[in-house]
Length: 409
Ligand code: GDP
Image 1 (cartoon, rainbow, N blue to C red):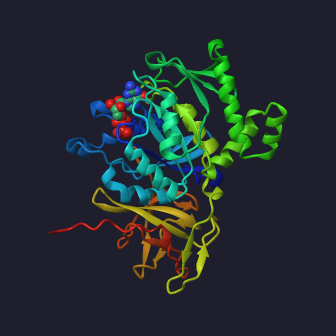
Image 2: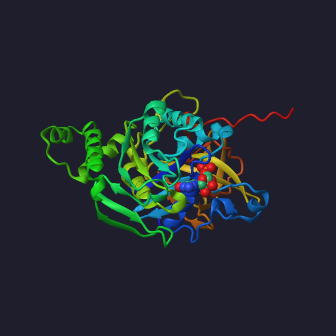
Image 3: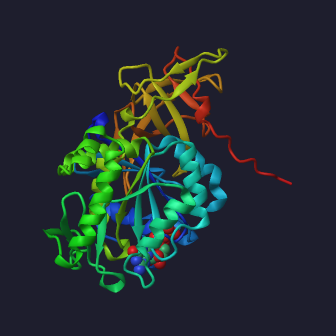
């Protein structure tokens, strides 16, 4: 793999309540994007997250902290966010390094307390989100109730991009409200084929009403669409999408997609939406840091030509060696480069760089602003440390979350 173009990078995480389907969705994303070549089921211990033998033995799931995958023109880094409520501090830490998120809700259980707390954390860091309402195939699935809870419990403005075709066991596809086409997901090839067809007649009125609401939401983000909306002039899909994208990045609205991940339904449109609505690293305000010993804020430009600056957001042991996951905010890092760690007052060598795929590590020679890379060779770095180009010390203080204190008593 070469270096991804900055505008095509999407650093995203999946946030959800336990059991809403995060593992199933992650696995489908990796399968459809070609990262993995077969799909295990969560319940048979074959989910990709369980594939490493020692993890199978211990019965736990540890993933790479950031798994890269390709979807069309997009280079997606899927950042692992801990699913368990006890790891709230880790959730916070990972929220700080991602640029966008997929929030998964179960259409049966709706918005559960844990989803509320993660949602509020994401609000705090202004993480743009798209929502995936999962399990529409299950008995008791209730889309309207879930949307109502998004508004009432999360004070969010959901914008429905699709309507379901069929319900519960009959759920077979969705109407794409931008193009007003029906999307059907094939049962036979693990859902790889999505066929597009005309809008089903019985859904015509409901689809037009839902599209009207979608146009209204876009009009709130774009005055020219507002003018067309008031005139009754039709607005084409590309303009709507671009307005909704701006609203999503500003965290003013939250596009909603539908599916049943276990039945392989809804994943491709979800991946399309990651590219279409969530921001590239360059589209978010730059992070700021401070020079040690100074109170002056320094803007860290998302620019591969600027002095290097990255955040160690996860330090993991990998085959007995220390592997540090870096979110690069500025500059370009070459394998073998020296880095300064202003907090620990030391210099270290980023001996080797990797992309950690689901099943293999890919050694790379360089990585640049906006990207995420795993680094071997850093000995003293702790999670939360900033690493910089020697001679350009800066600390991303606002990004560091202290490690939880473990009592030895
Ligand atoms: P996580 O805890 O959020 O990672 O959720 P999992 O992906 O482990 O899913 C929890 C349970 O729900 C598992 O038994 C899945 O097989 C099941 N599940 C996930 N998605 C769907 C779906 O779309 N439909 C149905 N019927 N079950 C699902």
